[in-house]
Image (cartoon, rainbow, N blue to C red; front, side, top):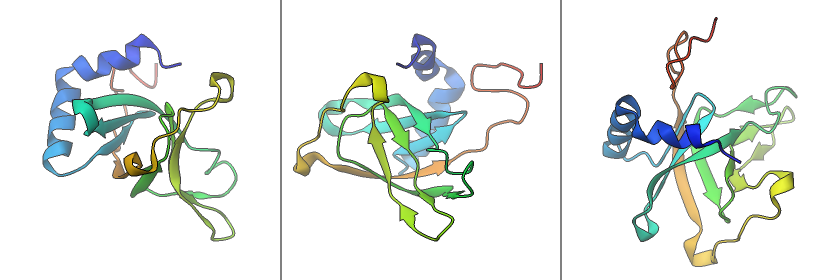
Length: 135
């Protein structure tokens, strides 16, 4: 489960500015520092924080896409970013729950969400919470 600290990100001025700029540019998913900021338009939800799962993509010789789309057919709290397998097979980005969370609540087919995303490279020294990465 996401730590309450992750939701504190949405209150930081720098994150608010980053998300406002992303929204102005038409971006609905932003990936930074291991978090996925996901914009839900339905029911005026707005920006929410999800966890990112690279699904072992780079670990197994696969290539993570830095830009692309994610198709959400459920309300899972983890976002698996799209990647290309070593054999060239493309794996669509999607949402899911962690194994111990149980099955993610499905969306109605009319409520499936396909959102473009982009990975932002954060400062190499300072994380979103202001932590120094090389301490």
